[in-house]
Length: 578
Ligand code: ATP
Image (tube, rainbow, N blue to C red; front, side, top):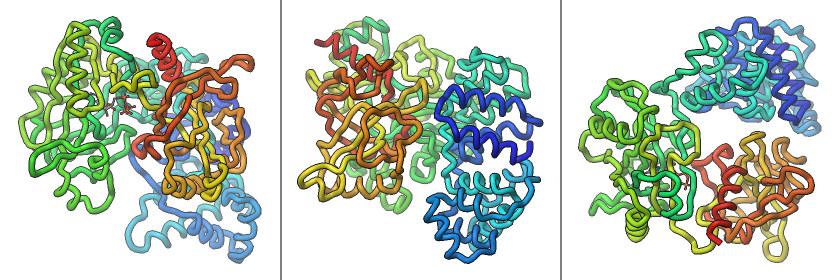
């Protein structure tokens, strides 16, 4: 496919905010691909502004300053002229479009992809000049429209608003003329987190490969998540006999072992391997199988007395620098709670809880770092309540209850796992992870910080967009306000972000980028919020007395925020409690 053809699709996608329209355009694009084997994956990554799936951590390493240099080099124009034009347009994509020469469009998607890849791969001494040189050369040989999108991809500013859900719908539409394949495609995607790979298999192999898609060592599985219920009674009524484990408050690690090579993915599927050397070593020593994939919660402990330390300390291990020093002060233990793959048994995600536990017993050898998370099988509400009370008294945040006959369901929050956290009496018993989409200047003393409260959204899993649920300001210290102002101003935008649905207009809009943790007293119905508002006359849901409890949840991306469905579930739980 010619890259210009793809750029024209980008133009059409950019012009719409309607998801159905986007789905139609994308499916038309997928149908028009010439060589599925070589192109479909690249086209999907590029549509999402990437070169490879996010977990591969590919970065172009080009700032706006370097982009400026590349455009100067490509156009031969004086730097002042480029600066003046950029100031007027506020976008280097538009600047390149307006100022680069009228070269005919001759490049293919493959040509451009390869050049982009070379830019991303350039590291070490001389890398900057190399990146600028290749990009300038590329811009010189492309049409203005092509240059505009190449520039935006490199700066991470393509932002066509194409979520994973839209890609999955479009793939189904392109192949089956309707959305009937969506469910199966999503299951496959949840098992590998790579939309390009799923699309390639869909278009080039028998559909049975999608239906029987197996997890792959090296590709993170989208993590299973827990639903909420509010009491032991409700849990037993819902799933009957079950296994109970402590809910550890550290960070989740999904570990892939391939011989001596160990890769550690976070809850968000980021590659965090380099941060946890002892978990790498522990895995090589304690996992008997050559290749395996398993999950656990990493917790810091006091090396003098073995005592497990609170989350505030554990979280200090999530850093890029001084790792050796931090490892000495706060070494980690990993409480292994699930297993997904082992060479001897293959993909074990379809096996029930007990079988996976038996496999874990066989595969995890005793040692210093990995420890199996203890579990107890219970039948009654009373037994469950006792374990919960004991866990809370021991300082844990609660328990995770697991269905005995269920497999590991990748990418889903459902009742195979149920979390029961310390209750806050009648208050909403779990915190909400809200996405910051704007802020208000605030009044009185707060006005002096330039920020008083935040407009928060939850994720609408149906549309892939964000719906407002609260305006929250309390819980923020003066330090927090200054810090927030600094980070939010880096992603402010003049108009409402495309994927935000809001009836409220904050003083400043910000692109959905950050997740904050909020505690609330109650979920109430509200006409001014769009969460759960299905038509104009219907009220939505809002948080009553929201308080920020964790400023920015760095371990969560906006795709991991609380969803509209979860809010409705919490609202129902609250109703039952009353
Ligand atoms: P939270 O914000 O409550 O940590 P979450 O959205 O990250 O929740 P949930 O599905 O609500 O995820 O809760 C499951 C999380 O609990 C897992 O992501 C994992 O990190 C943690 N966890 C701690 N102990 C266990 C355990 N024994 N089994 C499964 N998950 C556990």
